[in-house]
Image (cartoon, rainbow, N blue to C red):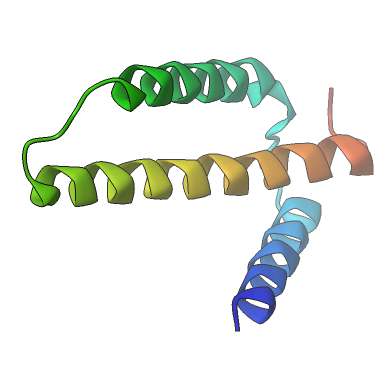
Length: 87
């Protein structure tokens, strides 16, 4: 089920990247900065202990959602670069 869902999301994002009029190829630096910030935050929170499981589950959900959004944005960005974006 996860393979089918992942394949359908990637396929949909690829179609969007190929047929949209918006140019995402100029967002490479910002994507890189967000990935670095996420990586540094994950290293920081690796050493912080959580007192209760509620905070830990919220932390995991937050970083999972941000990671999925960044990965989706990166798929659009990279697809447009491969297809020959405006820049």
